[in-house]
Structures are given as structure tokens and as C-alpha cells.
Length: 375
Image 1 (tube, rainbow, N blue to C red):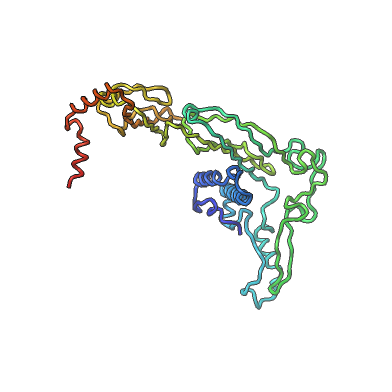
Image 2: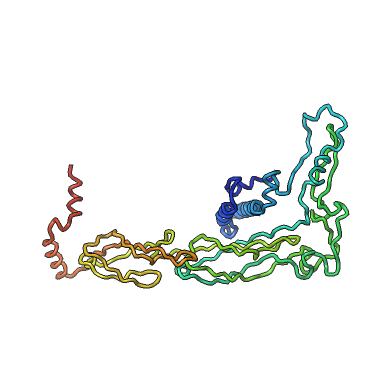
């Protein structure tokens, strides 16, 4: 029986396509071989195998026919049967080719048609952009390689002018049957044909351009427009631009995963932005206008008198743009009052006179602090 593809992706059996795709993107990002380039060979191998397992599970569960077959039979290839002794058959004669009869009820074979159309694999690309590129949007040309149908042979794998022939051993089915006699009758098992490797066809004169595979690897450039407001980890899908399918099947997709590099000033939460801004002691005390940096340029903001460190002010519409909407988040400014240092003698004297003139009522927070310490 095949592996449990739902468990591999961490989704339930009734998961929708979007849930499956989201789980796949998360796991593919975690186990992508590129992330293990500096790891040990054992770790690289384990990540590679896990990535293949995740990718295969995704291919099955996003293909309606394969998923239906897997849900019904436990394999995307349809019903699977294995030979073996069973107590329930003991004492009966004349069973003959029991398993052959069972196979007949399912069309005579257990494996999928080797020449049926199959969708191509998806390609995962990653692109890193700066914070300000995510604010205004950016165009990127991404280089990648993909499997394409060989133009010389049209994907047949045979040299131009020649044709592939049906495999004489399996009769074009791609599978061979082996019959074995047992105490309970004749047991029939199926396996991939060793002559045609499950293709059902034998190519005697191969295409030199693709070495008989029917496919070639080509370098391509994806023109990628990353729109304003793109967030870290978001994935863009380019339908039908992935690896070529087999036997006339559709091509896979390209998935572009965007990484937004962090910025030393701005912190993003959803579509709102947060910054911590130092302001002079005098402006915090007396109030005044400051230039608040935003992704769209300086914004003049009136700081009220008596502002304390940690106070937060909201500037509407200066956050991140919502994708495909002319709507913007807000900018939240947390102020930090800067205490002046290296004062001159005259400044110290003036400040001392100023401090002595302040009444306790003008420093209410200090009084409350000490009151709370009393029993």
C-alpha cells in the first residue's frame, strides 16, 4: 500500500485543494534541498528524500483522478492485489486462477495505463526582495530550468522517421503477469515489465537530441511582476509553465515564493507598520512638529506637549498597500524621549532651576509610583 499522503502533508482526508496547497508550500519551504547545501551528506539525503515524498503526495492529492483512486484503493494506480495464503480458502478444490478472475473484474490489470496522459511536475522558485520593493512592487527576471517535450521527436523518444513498437513481452500494457501454483490454487501477480520499463513501447532507434527520453532540459527566464503589498512567504502561481507532462498531459505550474528582507526601522504586522521613533526632550515636554519617516516619504506630525516615552500615535493610511486594492494599512509610531547628554554648566544650572520649579502635581506619575510602594 502507498504511503499515507494525507499524513505526509499533515492534512485531513477531506481537505480542500487550497488546504493541500498551503500545507505543501509550507513543507516544501522547510525541506527544499537548497536550504541544506551546507549540511552533512546524511542531512542532505534525508531532506532530498523528504522533499520528494512531499512533492509526490502533493501531485497525487491535487490530481482528481489520482486522488479518487488513492482514496478508494490506497494507491493512485488503482486497485492493488498481492498473493498469499489465507485460512479462508483451505479445504476447497477447483479454485483455478482465483486472482486472475479478480483482475478481470477490474479490467484485467492492476496498474494504470502507462501511455495515459500525466501532468508535469511543478517547479518551485524563490525570490528575495527588499522591504521597499515590497512597498512599491518590483519586476524580476528569474532564471530556471524546466523539462520540455523534445521538438525533434515530438516526445516519442524515437529518431525522426522511426516509430516505437509495442513491447512483445508485455503486449504494450507495461506490466507482466507471473503465475504461481500454491496449495490454494494459482496465484497471479503483476510487475513492471523489465523490457520496456513500464512504458509499453520499445524504441529501437532513439532520438539523439533527447537520448530516447522524449524530453530535454532547457534554460528559461520567467518574467515576474511582484505587486505592491507583497508579504513575506506569499506564493505566486504561474499556471502551465512548469515541467512538461507525459503522453500529452498538461504541464505543471511554477510556484514563486517571495521572501521579504527585514528592515531596521519598519516592522510589519498584516498591513500595518510599526516604528519606534526618538524625539527631543524639549518637543516631548513643550510639544512640537516632527518629521515621521514613512515608506512614502516624511510626514509632518504634531507631538502634543507632555508626551511620554512609550506613547503610541497612529498615522492613517501610511502602512502597507492591500494586494489588488487601493487601500492601505496604518503606521503606528511609538515615541522614545531622548534625554540630552553632555550638558554645559549653564545648561545644567538652567535645568536645575527648572526642576526646582516643577510641582509634584506636574509629575503625577512619579507620585503614583511611590504611593503604590506604600503599605
